[in-house]
Image 1 (cartoon, rainbow, N blue to C red):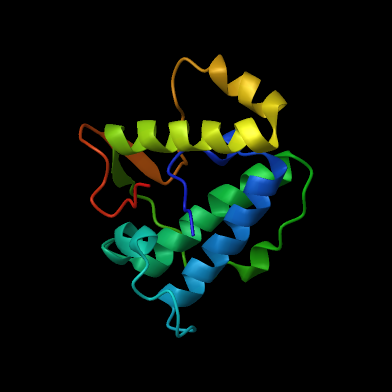
Image 2: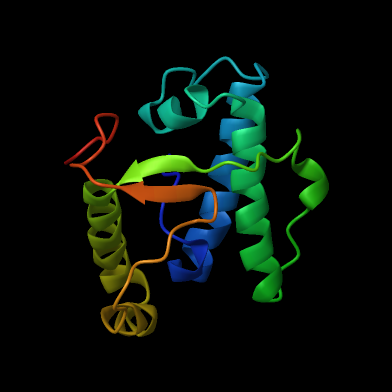
Length: 143
């Protein structure tokens, strides 16, 4: 499971669809509708939010908006909960790690998308998140 902090616009089509499915799974975990994945590290920041259900709903909304902008039709009725209006912090180290990780994936899957990323001057985040100074998040699994 990968719940990206960076904006979904950076993802290729395959990555965006996978993110939607994984975020829906995360929503089900946070709503207590699944047995598995309860302790997955990627869920940590959502669990720690004041309103975990609202946080994942807001996260899903950001993905759905990007999909709509690309002409995809993700079913927003699958988003449960009210959106939150406050951001969740993510460290600058985490953002750099994710951007680098995505570039490696795109090198294999979508070189055209990778070329677009190389010209980025500033990494834009998913609308739910705000950047704070720091190293890679403690919940990140590094291989």
